[in-house]
Image (cartoon, rainbow, N blue to C red):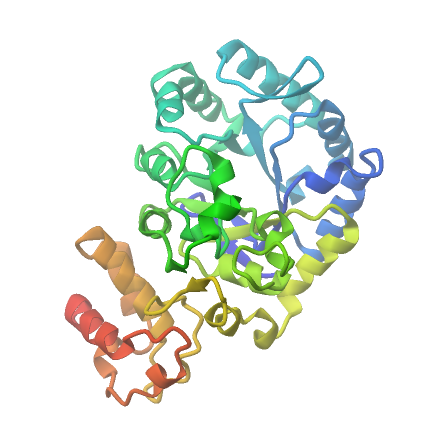
Length: 382
């Protein structure tokens, strides 16, 4: 298992994490099976958005004696009311739900306390100006949560939240079809068929700005819905008009700026094993570029996907990394010190480009790589 830094939190997380969809399976006995497999394979991160007390209790029991081996991202404001899940901003319900969660999990701290499901500006304002954010900050000061997170499907709202300075981890929906859709306060828009009826070209700029802002601010992204609820794995359901493999979806998410871990939505141990097997997959099995280039409904022409099909460079320039740092600098309008430092530690720099054009002949997306190298040399001074 490979590990990544979770933004600026200081936590190292497994590239493949777990969603909580499968924990409820087999009368909640799956919780122990999932955690056993995770411990065996090095998966150390899981999300717990559900407020179902039976699921929480089963996880608490499964964690007994090995709490320190796992990093828990659990949701504040996801409560159990009248026998069912409810998203709440009522501070009394929020506090009661948190205490119940801590008791059922049998732990005295949560690694990432995730403010649950914020998809509208009005909702973020209610949270940030009201008692919810104040309560979450109190929990962090008391050491009951170690870091503050937020989950969202709306790039505009998510960007506003991370720019507040309070949010350290963002749980966000990342996949090659959702990334085409503009911000919306209705999450259903992400997979409505009519939104994919007309030809789509390139990533929504607000989504790209969000990922780049997270990278710049040191906010780690934990990915949900990497498979689009399974639709991307089925040609008859995929908005792209063509199926992708699980490895391609995982690799796409893991090559976006600021992404630390992709949360597998596996419902069975077998599905989780298949997602974990990504770590042993070949470069060819992970490669999404040629599949993307052949999508009948979508064009990524001219857009660098950081897929590294441009390699090898005769001067050994890491073209994908140089382009990523260039895009981060252009999005900021200046060169942040962290971006400059990351660029300078590269073994070879854009100024070494001899403009042979070999990279451009290999790029599936017809990116103007030579122009990007010239820009990067001008921006970074090498």
